[in-house]
Image (cartoon, rainbow, N blue to C red; front, side, top):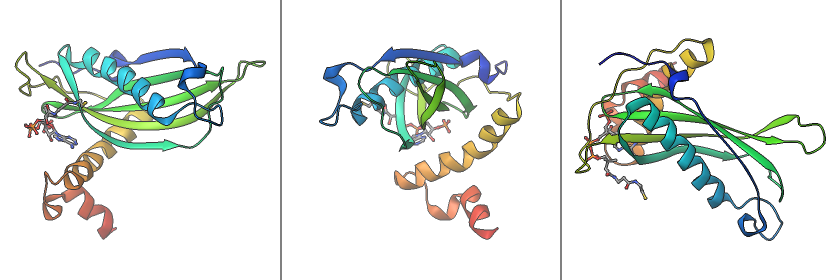
Length: 170
Ligand SMILES: CC(C)(COP(=O)(O)OP(=O)(O)OC[C@H]1O[C@@H](n2cnc3c(N)ncnc32)[C@H](O)[C@@H]1OP(=O)(O)O)[C@@H](O)C(=O)NCCC(=O)NCCS
């Protein structure tokens, strides 16, 4: 299968925060942001694989900044690395200042998706070839994150997580 670049899966989703999507402090409810990110990431994974994709894991989400009612929120998602049937999708979440239009980073998140056939069985995806420096950094770190996710899910023994061992040996 021919390799694709991360930019071929680049997805941007912009939406605003409505009253039904907030917590008692009138800030965006965490679960609502998780769902928005899941949608954006699944579109990116679909664009890379051109297959049905399912969320395998939510590996890292940091809620670093409150997102007030009425905010315009943009989620940028792209596939950072493709393995055999799974893909890592990295997301940056931006909030736009109402007056200046300036964007501030609110969150980052990393989800894993698996491409499946019509019966839900995992199916191979195209490899990925990173281009920019940031894409290369994220690509290199993705294997470590995948191994961590598999260890935490009880699907890989810690002793087999070569990338994690290398990290602690440094
Ligand atoms: C995700 C799913 C397809 C994996 O199936 P599986 O039987 O574990 O299949 P495999 O062991 O062959 O794994 C398939 C790929 O998923 C990866 N994977 C599985 N669990 C993972 C996890 N927790 N984190 C990261 N990757 C994971 C495997 O490493 C493998 O990747 P690779 O082929 O690129 O090396 C299956 O568990 C599933 O359908 N889950 C439900 C998905 C869903 O409904 N999501 C929405 C939740 S509401």
